[in-house]
Amino acid sequence: MTTAPHTLIKHALAGRVALDTRVTIRGWVRTRRDSKAGLSFINLHDGSCFDALQIVAPAELSNYESEILHVTTGCAIVATGTLVASQGKGQTCELQADGVEVVGWVDDPDTYPVAPKQHTFEYLREVAHLRPRTNTFGAITRVRHALSMAVHRFYHDNDFCWVHTPIVTASDCEGAGEMFRVSTLDLANLPRAEGGGVDWHRDFFGKEARLTVSGQLNVECYCLAMSKVYTFGPTFRAENSNTSRHLAEFWMIEPEVAFNDLHDNADLAEAFLKSIFRDLLNERGDDMKFFADRIDKGCIERLEKFVEASFERMTYTEAVDILLRAAAGGHKFEFPVTWGCDLQSEHERYLTEQHVGRPVVVMNYPKDIKAFYMRLNDDGKTVAAMDVLAPGIGEIIGGAQREERLDVLDARIDELGLIKDDYWWYRDLRRYGTVPHAGFGLGFERTLIYATGMQNVRDVIPFPRTPGNAEF
RNA sequence: UCCCCGAUAGCUCAAUUGGUAGAGCGGGCGGCUGUUAACCGCCAGGUUACUGGUUCGAGUCCAGUUCGGGGAGCCA
Image (cartoon, rainbow, N blue to C red; front, top):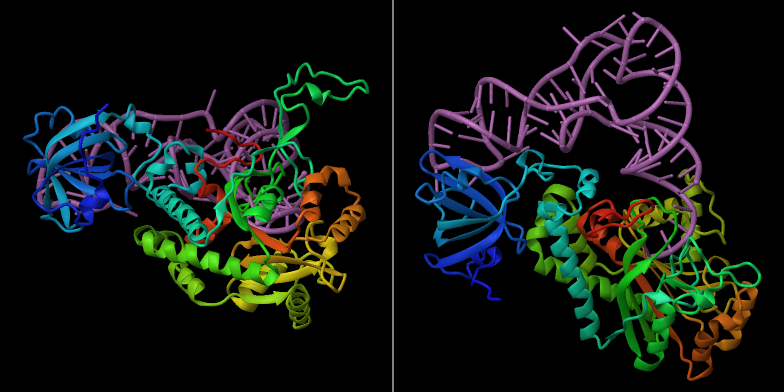
């Protein structure tokens, strides 16, 4: 198969193609306007940048009457001609076409779901297969890509290894969250064990298997060999969560660094977030300008401040004091604050939005509200956990220094009524060359809504999976 | 899962105390114009989410269901 030489619209618009040279442009029609002066204007997108290229189609084209005048939004065309300075306002250059081939027609223009107008995001979710053709989802797609590449660039440049932790896991010890089962058994005819329960030995993996809720336990193994590692992949939670911040399938980034303590961990989180946002501002100015114009006025300024200012850091105990003072000063909280309680959304929002006004790292939570693998502090009451809270989102990062002492880890496992044997390989890490280490998890979709000002994680992932919805 | 709100043309929304179903955009046709959210005229387009109830009469009131949104919990 040969590919006809063609030009991306971003290169044509950026001046990488000299004026008065012949080019071929391929893409999808956004709008068509006819002039009785004997020409039509076609706005064409190809996804390579935010802006469209204007195609000037003269009436002399052999298919002008028969085809060009019937082109509607969504048609796919290949236009060949000369890139020229525009005679009109609104664009610097345009394609003076001498040939326009309609490659793909729109069957029924009357009901084409994506009109060149404002649609609600709720509606566009119902046409998720066509929403990438809108300005907003084109911009989101490019921003998502740019941030993904920035993530890999940051870790690569800082000597991390990207570790592909498994999606399917047979260890039922990943901790928090309901998990999706993975099975090839016939649900209508399950093999039974002697007690009447399902005989999982007959299943594909010979035991119960599920989709991962975190790559952390696996990536710790590689951390204690490669020193600096991270995961970046899909994660699954079968929670019945119906909010603008939860998905059943989402992408998470989990770095893990040997010999790091909690403060190193917070330093890493800060340097990491600043790096990817700096890259985003540098690379996707066109899309970020769109988000600032149409979605969230302050999104660029917010990121610019973010990469300049240092993170506010406080302990859980300090956070509780701040909240108690706020309550005493008349601020109404639905849930009362006491030392030992988990921070509610309203508490996190107060801290990050009102008290600090930017992201804040809260560290050293009471051990009773955190996971077993978090390192017990010397006070015996708190663990070396940290949450990064962001305005408008809440928890964007959750992390900790891990418990590297086997006796302390075992005591925690016992305390929580967990079964030691289930964690045999995780415990082995503490028997063979254990070292202090720390890491965190960053929700990628939450990062995207923070960066763009979009309000729902369902609108920053191509095909959102939520309770009751796996269409497309 | 809990609380609150909503569902009317392809899309975004109107419709008075219950009394003939409307507009803009999009689409078709025509006019005008180097146009650009173009503009002007005409036309087409509806089982008012679904099921049942109250009523002479229901888009409107009541009950249930489905789907969607906001908030909460869980968390990233």
